[in-house]
Image (cartoon, rainbow, N blue to C red; front, top):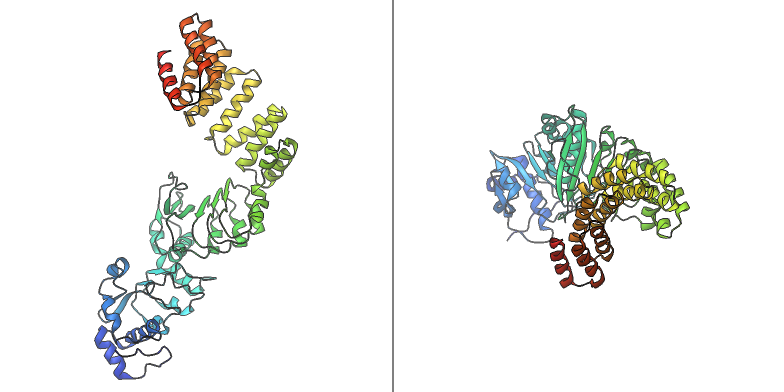
Length: 476
């Protein structure tokens, strides 16, 4: 075994260079990189000269996909290099001499900075900077991304000025983002590395999420994102972003922002400029819980409602809605507080404001049904309860409320069917059985009335009763 040459040596010995040229079948300039790289890997360990030869392939694809290969060499030039699998804490100085390299993986090296000269790698088409501790991306890398890496997104219809953003995110994540149709909802996907654009090529959504991600790839929120004037949905969750830039307040079209489970410590004041924001998730970051909860977005009267302090709840909701007029939680709790105060018309207005933002929340329609029932407007109550049941037909209380309103309008057959649906979902409800008995009495079906009445008296909460009750429903 021979000790590898130290990083500080100038590779002036032509014999050494020729030896590495022969081992790796490289030109003299790029052979120096392998000399330097062996010295970085070896540190104080003796390595056999040419140790890295066992990790050499001729295929970029093999280097990208096979952990047993870290270098691809073709016709005397290094065309792919993966340094992510080696424990080095600095880059070889000779890296910038790789004139034909197309693939470079620097992932997971925890580098705090990069030399501007990396941007001179004119043939580079794929670059992975994930898992580093960069404060900013060098301007030369931004230029490289713009000229080379972003091209694929332009070919997919993204306008050139916005394709740069996707190229930067690809480099910071280490994987290409895939386009999805404009009608696709990628928000709730467990894994996403996607974007969508409008018919003119402007970016509408960016979705980066991986619940199984343990490498924490993206560490920078690129300020270039803040130039996307039509961006409505942004998710970069379960990564390692540390700072939200002040320019985030420029994203005036943003409706959905999810930066869950990063390493963010502070929230810029400019976030209050996002007047169209409908959803915000900053949970599981490194900011104090008190900071997160003091954010106006999170002040929507819930604590006051829990304490039955409805006037204070209403005041807090209104103040939040002054800044974030599309905060669903604030509108919903304002509706609840007004309802408890007996201000039913104001409550209806608040709930319909929730519906304008998101019409698929059954609790909103259910509360509207309760209000219309209380106001004696049975037809409206039935209409909104039916809407709620279309959203979620498995909520027992909605069926029972529907039955109650049918009963009040003397539509007994429909009342019976609604009550039976409620009892199929939740059979242990004495009040529904009792109401069902009264309806059967009014219809003159006394046998069924007696069955329902007896069940109302005899119900006990255990699993055997549930099955017996469900069998009894089928007989009525």
